[in-house]
Image (tube, rainbow, N blue to C red; front, top):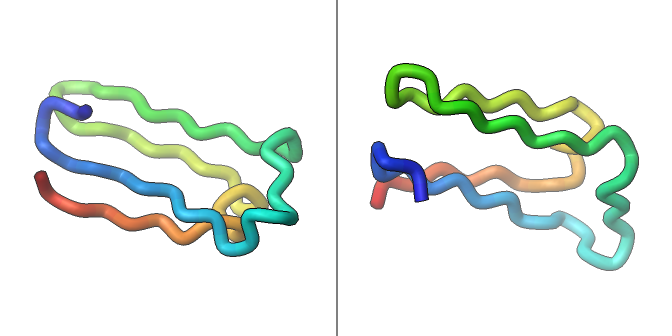
Length: 54
């Protein structure tokens, strides 16, 4: 869990047709306590992203 209490969920839109090998890179870096998220567009289109405070 991130230290700042932010939960990031990737929810597959179509679980049966997801291929994570197609340029799918999720980069989460913590710099100064703030996460930096970089998600390629093709990967993002296959998922719904939900941010929530914990």
